[in-house]
Every structure is written in structure tokens, then in C-alpha cells.
Length: 274
Image 1 (cartoon, rainbow, N blue to C red):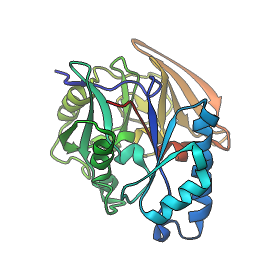
Image 2 (cartoon, one colour):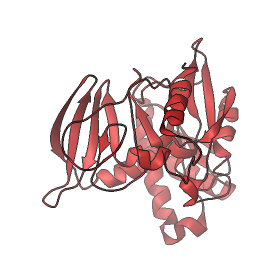
Image 3 (cartoon, rainbow, N blue to C red):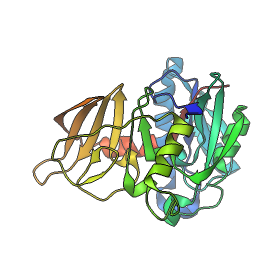
């Protein structure tokens, strides 16, 4: 039984958290350029007041001062300790409970299977939820926000390499994971592509490389419609459109600046206030 429902990413929301590059030892000579780029992204999201509320999350006071100087009135600045800026993975997941009340889920986090285990990344979700006034529900399994994408109607895309990887939840079976996705996020189904575009890695996504997080690979764009990134020797491609109950694939070129856009997307987490 589903306890919660996760809206689609394009559903109306009140604000977005964006992680602001803060750690000298992680960014080295790239710190200032990264800060400038994220601040520019924040200004674009705010769009001189025509966009949405932006909250830049800085890990310390020095970073907060840099964020304020670069973003100006485009963003609110808060200080909460974190390691990596990828709030999409480490931030809380905002869901609706059975009464429609907004609730923050805090799943366990282990640094992407121990690959990047940084201080405070396992706590930033709870800190942001508390600061925004969300009731917090602790979950007992390892899960990252970027591991899944939903369309708000119960359809989800994800990958075996992430959710079934023994470096995340070695004691959980596929059935266990699916039961948790239903209970936590309201996931009831997944697409089943028939197109022969590469080895299947689970939950309907086929890709050419053994990558992990779903948002490395795929994005649902509207109810039942998604895009999956595919590389070919001749030309990078995107294979597009997954419809509930049937599957149709088309191809679109991947533009050179898409990597930068995706990287910025990983640093943000949209939410609706309680």
C-alpha cells in the first residue's frame, strides 16, 4: 500500500534549493568559476522576479558571503553544512501523505555507495526539511533522489545499478525495493521499452553504458513521456517517449551544452512549502 505520493518535477512548487559550491579542498582552482556559474543559474531561475523563489544553500559563512555578492537579490542565502552540492540526491524528498499533507522523507545516504562519502551529506536532508518547516519521516533504506524520476501518475524510471547495487541495499531484493517505492513514493508501474537500444539495466531503461543514477540517463518530461540519453559511434542521441501501456521511441541530437545543464540540475531540489 502507498503511504505517500511524489508529484512530478514539473508540478507547481514554491521554491528551489540550490547547493552553492563551498569547499576549497573539493573545488580547488575551480571554486570561484563554479560559484559564478551557480549564481548565474540562480539568477536565471529567479528571472528578475518572474521566476520562482531561489534558496542558495552555502556550507559555511565564507561561501554564503560569496553567494550573496554573486546572486544579489535573486536568491535567499542560508548556511547549512554539507559536503557535495548535489542536493538532488542528498536533500529531502517532499511527498504528499494520504491526507494531502506535505511531508519530507529522509532516506539513508551512504555517499553513492561509498564512492564519495563526505561529511554532513547524510544530514543535509533533515536540516533543510527542519528549516523549511516540514514534518520529517525517517526511512530505513538507502535511496538517492537522483535514483528515480516520476511523472506524478505512478509511473517511474530507475536503474538496477543504483537501487539493486549491493553497495546500497545488499539485503533487499527487487521485490523489497519495489514495495518501498510504492510505499514511499506511490510508484505503481514502470515503462517496458521494446526498442533494441542496448542492454537492459532495469525498470524499463536501456542504455549503452553501466551507469548508476537514473538522472544520468533519463528524464520524464510529461505524463508518460520521457527522454533517455544514448551514445552511438556516429552521433550522440536521445531516445524519446515512453507511453504507459505502449512504447514509442524517436531520436533527437544531444547538444554540446547539455552536460553543463545536467550538472546544474543535480545541485537543485524543488519543493512546496508545508
